Image (cartoon, rainbow, N blue to C red):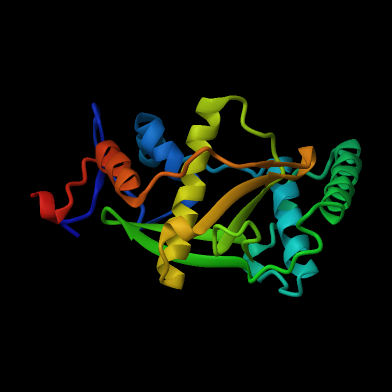
Length: 227
């Protein structure tokens, strides 16, 4: 479409995918040059073990709450090199540790309203796919809902790292606000880094206008009302 946003770079213009996952939004807005290069010359990548471990954990949580994962959510074991027996054993041990940590966490005894809820939103002309790991009824007396994003990797290194990561939560909050028909301010959103048994709550989440501005700056998209 003529209206399609394009990612600007000195070497030219790159047409964006029809949909992008919310988890990649930060890459597009913080390093558009690298994204443009990867779109221009896509290279196949084999999944890392950490990716497999994260997929296994998400599937386990989904099944734990009685909502089995769909086939599309299951990572093909053959996609990982299987010639490292020691690596397989370590992976299995880490998986058991993650499950034990989750079972002892505050989230274990709470029943989520939604698990692995997929919502597609349009932001500044771009479709963003938001897959919310879990949505709970909030218990703080301030918010109506609480979105929790499970993370099996490392917690943010510093404030700048958290600033980038919060973009994903901000998109999830916006998506669920549209889905539920409520004000985004009524929704809390946090990360739970399972390996560290650590809840990380950004000091603030970007509003829709800020997300739109970031995307427009990175892609050159001009909202119709500003043309």
